[in-house]
Length: 132
Image 1 (tube, rainbow, N blue to C red):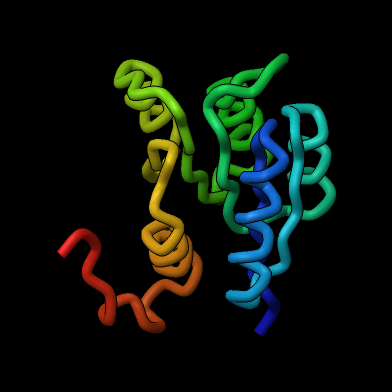
Image 2: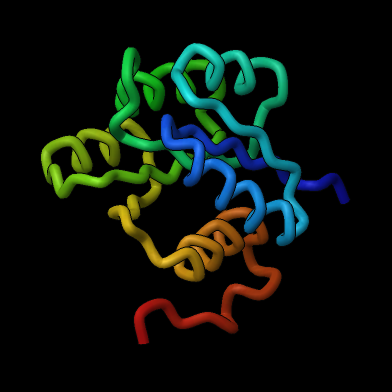
């Protein structure tokens, strides 16, 4: 089976490095981008299965990147990350196809479980209960 690809888009290097380590150790091929332009280049060249997308990125914000990602390939799964509780932006992101969002600082294990559930489908997701 081909390895699933995860693209991490965040302007904070520490978050990108952390998420790359977590998802590489889960067996995914990981890519990272610190801005919208490079994120969209990776989407076009690598066709990731899932994008972890920060809402607040200088230049092109997360909503704009989300719209471009979905225009390139509507089947790419997108999970939003935000440091802010902006419900209107989160609702708009969901309207544009984002599956869920995590508010920073997020629980890395919850994020790992959510990504595994999205990418591995029925393989083992009945083992997890989120937020017991």
